[in-house]
Length: 474
Image 1 (cartoon, rainbow, N blue to C red):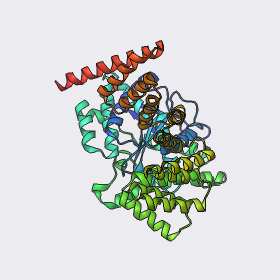
Image 2 (cartoon, helix red, strand yellow):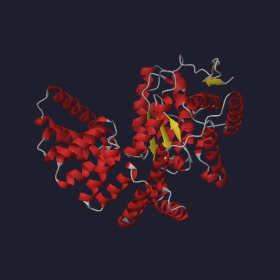
Image 3 (spheres, rainbow, N blue to C red):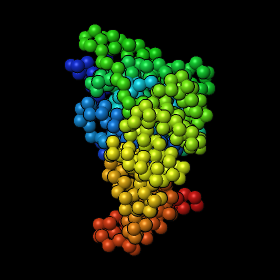
Image 4 (cartoon, rainbow, N blue to C red):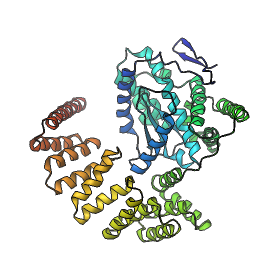
């Protein structure tokens, strides 16, 4: 039975009949406090991490994460999943359901069960409220300060050493921050709960085992490159031994879950390698793979994306056209080809190709984004508006969608909407002065009373933030 220490107080964790450790949800800060803390966390993390702003990857990782969450008991949080662009073998969770996984770890994976295993483990940390329990004794410390300490630890987990140290030391003494690190009991409990819900979702529990072995393998590259995941997530050997025992027991008691082959995972994996890892390494990887197996559609997709990233648009067209010969109705390949046509300024070809992709998969986020941009270039702002608004309605709009939607509104003379949307764009970029200019212009043009009230509130908050920044600099 796992024991969770919380600054001198020991909580006994009881077993469910099913054999899952039950989290002690009655302890820790309140749900409202945890959500407040999470908002402070996110300010630090989004300012210090390079979060992948890709609607295809964001859509995939959130669909997978929410599929796993659906099998957990009802929770008070809405979960959100993010990919961080960095060649690190790591993942972590903040309070209140924000879960981050690094592009380097995803690139090292071979199937969806591995990714699902890591996500299930991190979801379990949130479900058990591990960090909130440890913070309970420090409620006397202001939430922003606690978030600075905890975000510093998480950035340390990520390998962002200088940023992490500055946040942690600047907020609280190192001895105080140590209390927030996960214990051995926390990690084992997250493994135990994660494995049960991983298999409930239909995944082979070996996925978590394989992923942890890959993380552990980094040790062989020398002490300077040992990922801090291993240092801050203790007892990796013990955890692997436990997982092995769990798998043996459950395989005896029931049929092992079949290994899932997910096309969505393969597409997202190829995309991460092609667009968010070292460009020269990605080119060599995909070129070699295509030479060995010319009929592998996914490798051709990745190779085409990487060639386009490198600026070799003509070869990218050739590679993706060959992929279409192998899989003529693939919306992903059609979209990739349409995107290359767009980048090459071949807008009529881009329009036809992207429309074909959307006729197969109408909610394809990349297809909607590039058809919108293509329609803008061709002088059809109303059609562009429809595409960009579809992305907004699905919650898949990145910063650039707001920018081009603002342009589409402006081209149609919808100036209140144009300034408002451009204000959101600059706000997301943390360019407060530019955001203020756009919101002020929107206020002058807006007649809707609810929108006017929202704009007044936004302007007041921006003014307060700018005043604070000026004071701190002074």
